[in-house]
Length: 386
Image 1 (tube, helix red, strand yellow):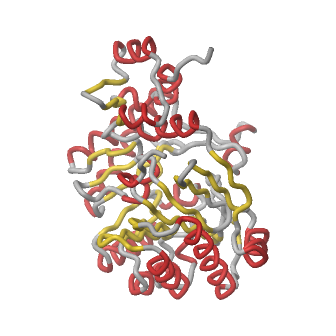
Image 2: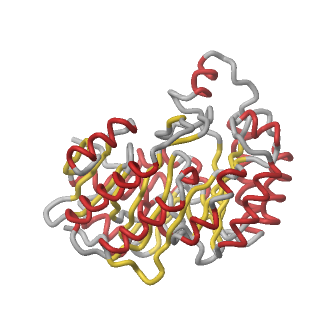
Image 3: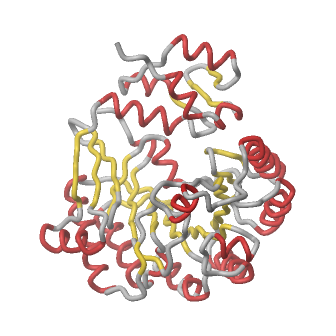
């Protein structure tokens, strides 16, 4: 099988619980104000043990606590998971341990405990620097609470990221320019900047379908907002290394880069997905999405995995192409070929002529304009099946 080590091996831990469901969110999250922490800790540890037996010895390069709202976990649970992962695999000397956090006062109060337990990177979901827009987005924190939590994270760890959502309702180009400029005055070493996407199955999706979500940007304004984002971040020293992610040199998210470079990871927790290169095949795993079903499955069988499948080689190559072109470093065409992938020659010529992609030696890159139209570019590059 293809050598995956160059992209790394990580552990993704999904904490499915939230204090409130944001109307734009299509992640696997569930509202609760009470969690049996001891029971959930035991189940997550047991699932890690199951996968460690499956993978055998590996060098662990990252752990990522996502959700949901992982900052609702008690620090003892986070510490136990980190310790178990370090015990079951060999931790890299520069192991990255990221925890996504909401900046409410309750969550921020746990930050020092998380750091004591081994977290060395905190991703704070600020989402907006406008109180009215935070309410529209269903967030429970204010701008001032967000800034307090973010500053606390910066005091506790060297690596801090913040998330912001733009292309919000009635947001002008000037307003976003001012907001992003403000964020860049206090940001850490990494920013994740996402255009608001209206997803089916969300509260926003239902409102939009009913015509009750006015003020969303048209295509021209969306492009203007994108260009403002790139210009301001670049001028401030934040390189766009992935479609929606910007970082100072060396501060890129190591865990997410595992996904984009086609590496391996174990996923534990409700709804978590994983990809593992085994001796004879690359497998995809998917855990039961509902919390009660997941924890019951773990307690009965030792794992919350609901479905496991061998990925056809064509699908492995397609994933590598899809993820690789999101990165500014581009796609390694030699590795893509070893995975069984190919590029439609006529489509490549058209995309290059239109300035959407470029090549250099053995690498293929999406240009700035190509990144804006990446789905269409991918269709052009994919070989037509006979």
